Image (cartoon, rainbow, N blue to C red; front, side):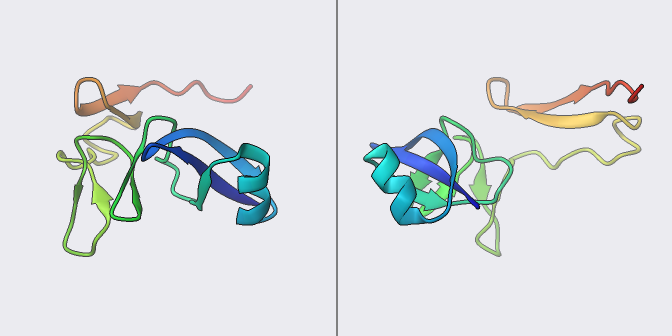
Length: 100
């Protein structure tokens, strides 16, 4: 099964899993675009037929959406998980609890 972004007015309104694009569009009644990109979430925007994860992200030289601030290295974030905060346009570090 594949992941599809459900598009309405150039915005991602949902992300679903379906066998094919045709099935996804039939189920939702909307345009659907296949995307395995982990940053594609509700609120992402369709720009020039590509899904832009966040309004602040820009295209790099390889035509890939990237944040305006590079993700901190593992050492810089002291081994914590980094997550893009689209409200503050910066990386947040999150403590990850070890599995029991």
